[in-house]
Length: 181
Image 1: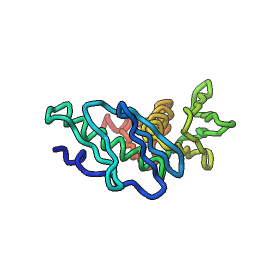
Image 2: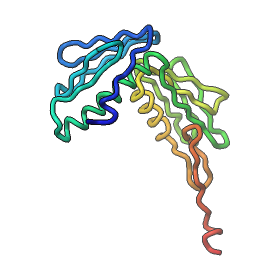
Image 3: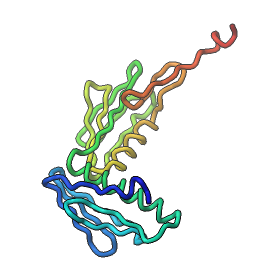
């Protein structure tokens, strides 16, 4: 059996899990609710205050879906109880971000100012003009939006200017002068 898939997911107090026909699972918690449909090759059940995922056979596809389904359900439970957030940092002279209503406007050395509107369920915040916080219930949606913002101006490997994840280390390359020596 899958080591990840066979572990039950404890349901914290204040969280309600509803398993509907067709393997549609809805998780409701203090921060909101998430729902997702899973493959019919795995079964999801609520037993003894925990979510249990079981697979139909021992085929490779079923084994992969077993662990994946359990991990996605764990992310849903964590999302409705604690939520997810991803921080981005902007580095560079004149580079900054501002929030206009619900839209993030970036000044990152381009002729036009890119604007990013978050999908429903994802919130943006700006701290100090150079730190962006992406937060929400859905781990995938938060990570996807953070990656899209970072892709607008990834950190330059020569000067380090651009948008990077908080804590990301950019290894700077030497310029032409260092290469000639």
